[in-house]
Amino acid sequence: MKIKNVTIAGGGVLGAQIAYVTAFHGFNVTIWGRSEGSIERIKPRIENLHNIFSKELMACPSYIGAENPNYPRSFFKDKNEITNEKIEELKNVNEKIFKEIKYTTDLNEAFSDADFVIEAIAEIVDQKKDFYEKISSYLKEDAIIATNSSTFLPSTFREYTGREDKFLSLHFANSIWRQNLAEVMKHDKTSDEAFESVIEFAKNIGMYPAVIKKEQAGYILNSLLVPFINAGLNLYGNDVAEPKDIDMDWKIGTGSPRGPFEIIDIVGITTVINISKTNPQANDPNSPIAKAIKKLEERAAKGLKGIETGEGFYKYK
Amino acid sequence: MKIKNVTIAGGGVLGAQIAYVTAFHGFNVTIWGRSEGSIERIKPRIENLHNIFSKELMACPSYIGAENPNYPRSFFKDKNEITNEKIEELKNVNEKIFKEIKYTTDLNEAFSDADFVIEAIAEIVDQKKDFYEKISSYLKEDAIIATNSSTFLPSTFREYTGREDKFLSLHFANSIWRQNLAEVMKHDKTSDEAFESVIEFAKNIGMYPAVIKKEQAGYILNSLLVPFINAGLNLYGNDVAEPKDIDMDWKIGTGSPRGPFEIIDIVGITTVINISKTNPQANDPNSPIAKAIKKLEERAAKGLKGIETGEGFYKYK
Image 1 (cartoon, helix red, strand yellow):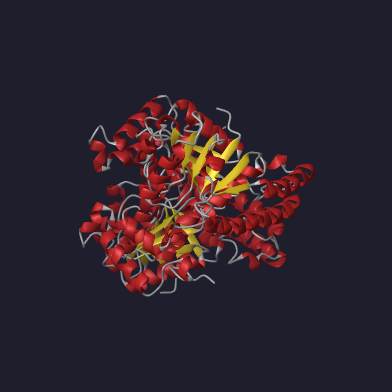
Image 2 (cartoon, rainbow over the protein chains, first blue to last red; image 1 turned 90 degrees about the horizontal axis):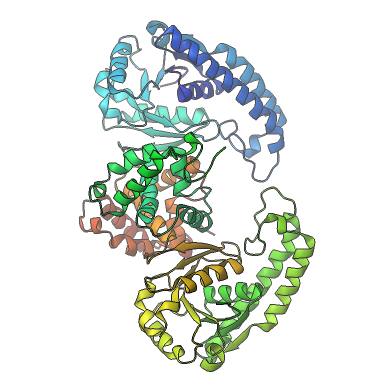
């Protein structure tokens, strides 16, 4: 399946990033919004990305020839591709695509020509099911659909798509032009062909495709992050050490940029509490994790919820 | 307790590093070895460190004024302290201490003047117990002892020291002049005074002291690493994804330098198998961790044990 026309459904923060990066890599991009109101909310996000990409490209000459440049990974295959010619070429691309991305609320316009649909609408099961049912009659027979859902497995929705074998998950991080990770996850009815096409698509838009061969809640990243954060919380709940020392220990010991409590501040304490409560050990009030949840709840009650509130385990301006 | 005279027992790789860094920071250092033969094995390690420090110091001028220099953290309080004057001063220190470190097999000479003893002998319980019993009669009443044991909790040995309240753990990483982490761990009979003295000592030799307020097997670092590696092994055992993709996902998603399988290659597959087998879930042959152990054992049988054998999940020259 040769993907050329890509439709992004939903233009939230991530939907807009996916759309922009996809267009930036030469695909024909249409953004579908539920209403005129939602289209009007999407356009400023795309304008903002246009500006961000302009600024990124302006900084790119300083990366030429640098030993270990921290460049936008989705812009260049590798650091050797960073040349003045390539930068100029990408500047033109950035101006061009900005004008060419199409917006529509019309299902026929959005979906009848699409080779590939990326669903990035709200994380509400019924809305997603309804969406898939609605678009299926417009789609070409061989069109592939991917959900960007963080929370739900693709098998939750596949029966509503009318094409279980051409349905899978494609999950992005944030700031995807820099954090160029795409988790590509099949379910047991996804065809190898559709799986390969989407892996290839992810590469073609400058992503590293992390190939997930069977359904896994949390994909790879959260499957590692949750136990890691849990291990930090166990030490904290058990009063073994203070968050700052746990973080510093991990950072010096492994060379990583952030320890568990700095990551908790990014994720937000409320989310971490909710995830931790699903841990069976949390039912025992004497368990380290239950004690940690209690301490987190006390902090949350004081408004120390992480970066979103300006202070968590650390202060943020 | 003002620490001035420090005796390091055992001059293995880490014992030598601890001794050298301690001397480098102005303490009087004696290395005690069990026999003349062990002293002769220690001396080349100290010579090697003298050369390493010389080379490190020669590179230091290039760090002056750099935005994010990767300098030996135990040499300077912070990057602002990196000046030509300071570098020259440290070069002199390096030459001076190299000649001043004392070596002895004599218990009286090694321990009767020591304010602080760091035990870094073999990880054999009976040898350590025997050592503590032997030195206790030589020590000053107020001398503090720390064990660098990675494997054993301080309570395993405290009754043999004759000074439970002045005994605790002080655990170092490797290449401690760069990876400047010291995990300081008390047990429930360690006095606050001794605990504070050793935390202060760790700071004074340029370490970040990670304060561990109660006994914790694996200190902080391994308490985080083991569940993290276990999470990676669960994905691997369950055939969710390949090690390379799991590592890349973590690295791109968190900005960390190494994923779980790169860390397994450093730790060594044999050690990881042994640790994983202590996981209760490993008893169920259908569990992801049991399946992962089986795969690891197959790789180990082929000699793919990690960096030590030149190849693990990755190849090393």
